[in-house]
Length: 407
Image (cartoon, rainbow, N blue to C red; front, side, top):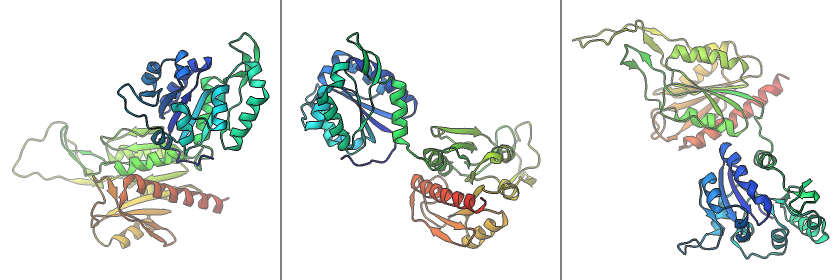
């Protein structure tokens, strides 16, 4: 029985030689539009119904049809089987089902199936009498016993002119089945999450600003991790050069005041709030409308920006989980713990400038999560993606603890 692989969205589509193969480019397009990566393997007979060239264009990947490519290079079926998070064989003809059930591996699709370590699904498609034949039923039952998920054929008009069960489901139906298989139960499905990221820029004049070195990488990784857990994510971002993660709604802002206004609106309906942005504490008292000319000495008067995290903590509704960030250069634990209590947070993520590879601009980070009950979780140096996953897992745990306490 194939073992479960991590569900990151890599779909291996196997196509065997049935008339329903003509529907497969549409399924590939739906999967690609959803942000999934797709690779295609065809049996030799499938090429009579749909071209490899069409599937290569819509999948944006080469299509495997033989054991060796045109240059004589081996198409590594073991590598393909390890690559996929989910394999779907559609249409699955009576011949392909029989070979799968009895261990016959005489084409690239079948050798890949026998090498797959991910969940495997099949969508049988054939004429009415073939689908009803006892041998086909026995092969399907045997595949189910081996852990293969069988998508039943539908009733409808068939290529022979008959009407009955044997018709492959439409691409939209297969797409829905794939998505449900990839994401069976996500802990944050239906939950609203707000994340802030990046710096804020406080304008001095039309060409200059006060800012900081935040790249936004940490906040964006957190937003992406929340989305992968099923949350509806609103990402309020200062100026950064990063594309928004898929399935994340980004609101772009520049100044601390703009971020403040956006946060107060989005936080009202948020179940979890993570404030990872590096918001400027001060802004110029006056922003000049024209470029400031060079002078021997320039005096700037600065005024405090609104304390967004403090305001959110003061109005935090029951059941909401609020997590802040602190970047410190001295007395790190003391200052972060005081900020945690003062701003009514559930947890605070401490970055220390003393830790090599942590903080701004790096692809790695080293953080300590401090909880309002005094517990401390010091994480080692990891990629920001891994740190984000840890923070999100802790946010989920805290949120459901808060929900239970307030129920």
